[in-house]
Length: 103
Image (cartoon, rainbow, N blue to C red; front, side):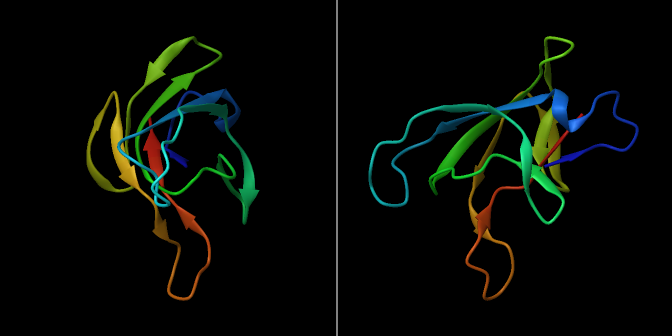
């Protein structure tokens, strides 16, 4: 996850909620996940061990107690929620992610 340059918060302030939209990749019914960001390796912040699927994602500033605007990284307009699908990080990668930006 990335913050817009000049953001008035730190990644430790951010909490994401991921709500499955339809079944997960394995066909099972998912559950909503709400969690704070943590280091996921490689210097990036995110939520670890999220089952692969399609999610409606929202962001919340825990310190200021207010919602944040969110979008897929470098894609589209900011809004209250964004829908994302897991993709591989790069060719040959076994890791999958949804990368978002908040402001």
